[in-house]
Length: 92
Image (cartoon, rainbow, N blue to C red; front, side, top):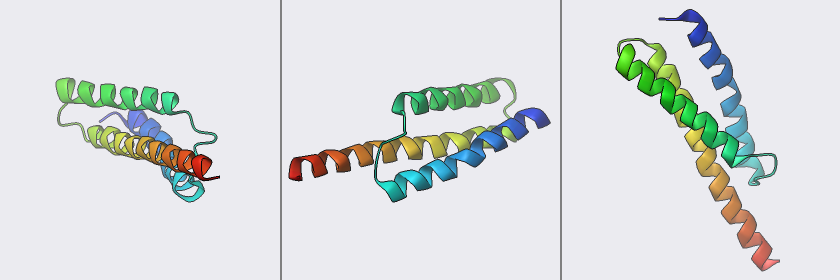
């Protein structure tokens, strides 16, 4: 296990629950960049692929998976919130 890689993933991962909460509570897309989130998600997928191919037993793999799931959740919430915003625009 690479301790500094794990620490980096823990630090990056600590921000996603806050972002997810903001998406749930605000029901808005403001301040979010779906393009940025897709780039981050692609990075986590690359990390997962690297671990599966080169170090399949490394527990750091699960940090990539956890972070990837959180980013995917925030992406899904972005599209939910965009739908909510469009519905509100049509009504009002």
